[in-house]
Length: 213
Length: 361
Image 1 (cartoon, rainbow over the protein chains, first blue to last red):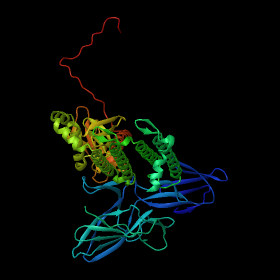
Image 2 (cartoon, helix red, strand yellow):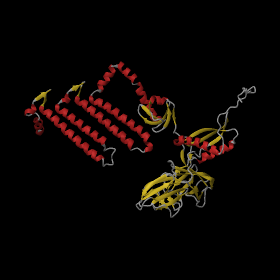
Image 3 (spheres, each protein chain N blue to C red):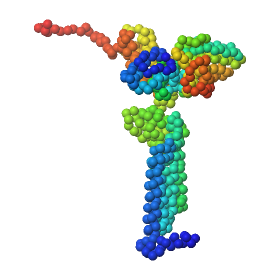
């Protein structure tokens, strides 16, 4: 699914979507996904299907609400996985020929009605093992404070984030949530959540996001 | 020194030294024409060079057709000034000041104006998209400041400052009349400045103001321009805008959609609410938080009225509103839930009798 595909007649299934490549002549390939169609001249270059952060109509944050809130003891931490929404970039060379959303698209307001911000919204259980989902984020929740802390959701900065992938799954970079005395702070480390993954973008850390609300 | 004397005398030797009109010699005219021709030539060559350069440079914002024309005009004007100087015309006086001073003042004002305009354009062009509205206003303020300063400097160079003050002091009544007539302009100007700091709206905001609804197209120093939804330009003086109630439709990140739908009395209201909730949940732009609410609002004359309160991103509000209405109608139809027509049951005090004429049956 993710990775490079030859420009020849074939179906490629990406999550709940299907891409159809059809050789029209020796050098022309018709790209079709639902209503989207492109005619691509084949020069031997491969079609790349890559994961992209779930920016939707132009948001900069993803809010993942846990099905069950996490409770972390003082001076302790836990690591696990959550399902996360992703989008798909279809490229030839460096040119994006198609971009679409897989799975459910939903938004929510994070913060107050006066000062909040719209972000992508997703509800996910907290898994100790990697879930069977197309988009995954590995999360370390740390509580350095001397008190018990609970966490109901995590807000992930995604604007300009690198993405990682293997053939069937896309990953957000490793996320570290530190629950300080006041508000949780989310660090999108930009690092691969595990070894052996391919990277899209530059593996740089994003500025920490303080969850004020 | 000798060279200068020789070169000066060259234009006064022989035929060139003959006086034609207003004590101007043929030599002076020839010198003026020569300066003018050389100036025009240089101006044209420079313009051509800059136009060619503008096709290959990446600094198009500075080296372009506009700059080429400006420099061309500058050289032509300077050539004209030197020509007039050669003719000795600049020493003449008009309104108590020399033509030389007048021309210098005009040049200072004109090129300050061009510089201010270029700087304003550059500030706007080089600003990131998200800061554009703010930068536009700052650039305009900068532009007006430079032009105003240049105007007073030019007046000073022309030697009008003292005269102007005396004139205004002398014509007190005229001053008052002028003051009253400029009141609106000044009021609009001050309102424009206050609005800059108050920031009730910015360029690109959808607003309802002074009875008009549309997108803020431009905020100028005296007026604000709004493009109405049906594509008309409305110019609202800043003073009026400042004193009006302004409804900014996108100031906050989310906006609520309010819709009421009526179902027949015989229908199960809870089932209708569940169907509508499920539909709202399936719509991406209906925000999950704040959660949409669906409830029985009132028992109307003809229907049980169900209220829908759903939040949407402000920029998607209109789309969400139209989609909710359409989808709710569709899902209620699919669920077999009736949206009734208005109906009225008539009761008569006496029983109605129908009279049948012979032969009608």
